[in-house]
Length: 263
Ligand code: KIV
Ligand code: NA
Image 1 (tube, rainbow, N blue to C red):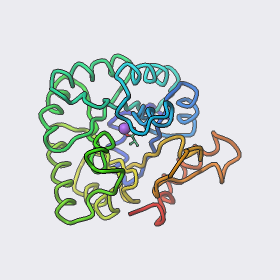
Image 2: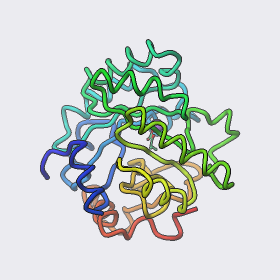
Image 3: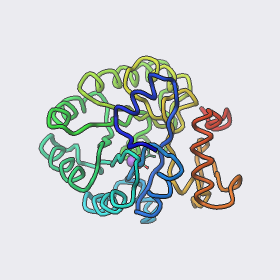
Image 4: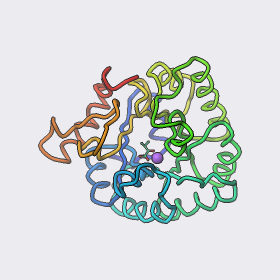
């Protein structure tokens, strides 16, 4: 695989070719995912849940994310490295800029931030300084206590319209990528069609430009309740590299997500 950049993702979108993304938290899994052709790796704050055993992503610190980012950056091949800003990095623009700077120094190539239209100012300041941003909308896990649980967002027309308008506003402010989590497939399609920038979905239906999953879900080792949008690719593979390859191929061929994984 040739080195993946933001331009690659934009070109794939223009060509109507979907791309695959996967979380990674260390060098070996990062390399294995890259070797399978996975275009984008995310050091997600989901590490608080899948690595640390917390019930949410809120306890994860900037230093912990930086530690995993350095590991993934050393191991990754040609994949693009996206990294999450942790809970409360958006407390102020100053805080946002400082934390994003730390992530970029640790090896991030794209930083992801949760937030609605009000994040526009922060995103504008980041992009002005050369930090590309992915804006995470829909179900934003850092707001789980406010949302009252991990629930599908944008089911009502009014809420769906707001998510689409927020996405437009954040792209206008400079966001290079939008990530949509847990929204109806119809909204995933509408946002992807409305925007020129790539839209990555998780539980957002088959029509987003990219798909992302948490690695532990792909490997079928998640404990507790697994969300509807998850698929265990180990059942159709002989080993871990095979499962990553299968996931990548299924995204590329638009076999994943299937109807049963969508809202
Ligand atoms: O932290 C994470 O892994 C994420 C993905 C689920 C999108 O934000
Ligand atoms: Na996250």
